[in-house]
View 1: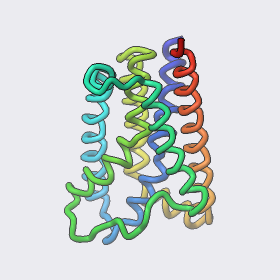
View 2: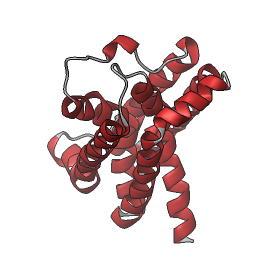
View 3: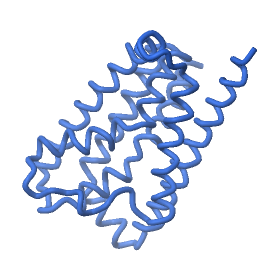
View 4: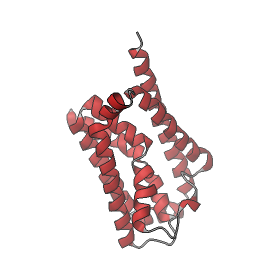
Amino acid sequence: MEAVTIIEHSIYFLALLNPASKILFLTGYTPALSFKELFEMSWKSSLAALAMLLCFVFIGKFVLNVVFRVDIYSLKIVGGLVLFFIGWTAIRKGMFFQTDEHKVHESLSEVSIVPLAAPLIAGPGTITASISFAAEFGIPTCLSALGIALLLNFVLMLFSVEIGRLMKFLCMTGPLIRITGLIVATVSMQMMLSGVGEWLKSMP
């Protein structure tokens, strides 16, 4: 049963990670990346994002509750709202970000951290899920699901050039972005509804 739960949460995390946005970012990078550069950006960004998310898994709930006096349901509502606008932008405009965000003069290490590691990997959705899942299902389950999702995302990033070419050849880039945006928006809406439900239960 626990294995099934981990798989379900891994799929949920993968939806929040939104590999399509990373594929589009890497395939649209100027100048074009060699496989060595792609590998470097992929592992650096994945490792940096993992470090950030681990902090939220272990101390996120404590920081929210004790330091900022914020409940988990508030984080779910706000995090879901931010994530919804990301998905809505993808549905409406057919893109997750402006292509002119890629700065040629920035080093690969800089781009690997911002914007790749954060906010494209460790974004509002994954941060919210990391904190709430650790509190609801336990740290071991959360870490297992998060690790699997990040590993799958890393593999997809490594082959982003090939995937991007295939999508372009099949004329599926636009539809894929909008379908992914719909999934992201749907997940974010569920996250907000869950937060509202918890808020209503907490009322006297």
